[in-house]
Length: 228
Image (cartoon, rainbow, N blue to C red; front, side, top):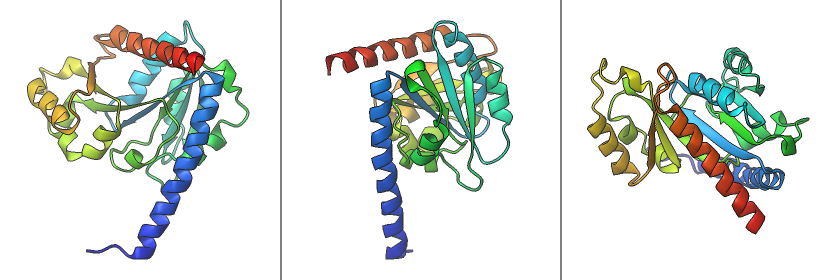
């Protein structure tokens, strides 16, 4: 079925506008020295649980903040606020992803120079968010061991747009019969060499390594900003 040329044109214009604003956001973030991570996953993969842990741990040494995207409710934002971090909700209504202008508007009133890490928890969806740059430094795609080993090849666009893949709920791997080799093979079929981290918030497995990775990435970012 061929798409209506008008529909294609509108979509291209929307993405162009988003990319231009994302470029401006990225410049603002860089000038303020804030490192931005865009977290994407399907619903139920454990984004909010992991992000709460990340905010709590990083918040001991850095100023951390989060923007949370959901179709409705502020439930996730309320959970994240328990970490003590600055948190704002973005309620999208019928929109299945976050866009740069949503991020821009929600940041109003915050002094970015006071923030070290800004996490953006995208709407639970592995399709739409792949097309929308939010000005982030790093895009992280999360998969739970309960979702099946072929998930990466079902959603190749989001994997190709990500910098890092995080496998969550790794403590359940044996119970659900998670086939690690098949999952890694699927990831590398889509994005050869993608960086992969395995974590469990319940047991703490992999969390220290993941936090260290983020701190290292933040340090590299700061060094690059100074030398530019």
